[in-house]
Image 1 (cartoon, rainbow, N blue to C red):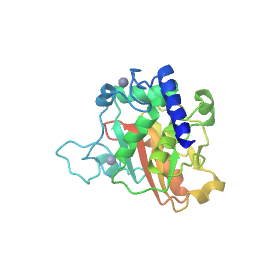
Image 2 (cartoon, protein in one colour):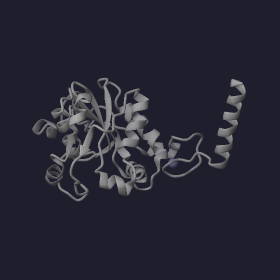
Image 3 (cartoon, rainbow, N blue to C red):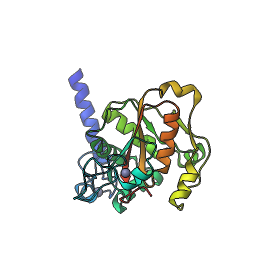
Image 4 (cartoon, protein in one colour):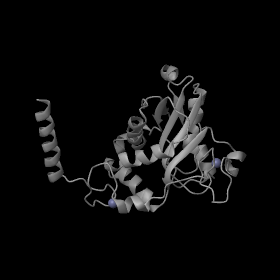
Length: 248
Ligand SMILES: [Zn+2]
Ligand SMILES: [Zn+2]
């Protein structure tokens, strides 16, 4: 019976592939299996490798010292203990993220999460995965939180529990896009909090904070500060893509 079930299942997958063949989430070319990028799109992304700033994950030049912190982190340490990113934020990475944010193309999520898991090799084992929340009003217009989609995929790869209801945004913040670094920081400081009744789920925990992009780090730092205030022992940040310049 089990065998027959397996055959039916395989036939079902075959039929589905025939009707809706797996496609690359970025360029729509036909590919072997869902949840992957085609070779060409994969090859255009730029994975971040060592040497990098041990704190914020900023990629250093080839001659820079491994194990050091960048100037920006030394001047003004972010509230998170460390950050890592899968790839550099460029036009290729951007098109995957924008497809996810505004086109609802969730097909790219598994590939993005795998790249993020790769960036976490060598980092401490964490206890829970917490996505950076959207304000409910924005969630309503966009219908889903891209950080949560990525966080869910990552939590299953890492076998860590996902807790999407720890952090909340208690005031809507204008879109960060057009603001300066200082403006961004002012915009998000105090915008996040941990709900009183869930503080026990954060106390003493190592929290892996998940977001899609790291630009100035202001949003992630505000989230990390809220988690630390609630008693988190450690906050590590992982994003799909980060800008090349220092957070500033
Ligand atoms: Zn492609
Ligand atoms: Zn740094």
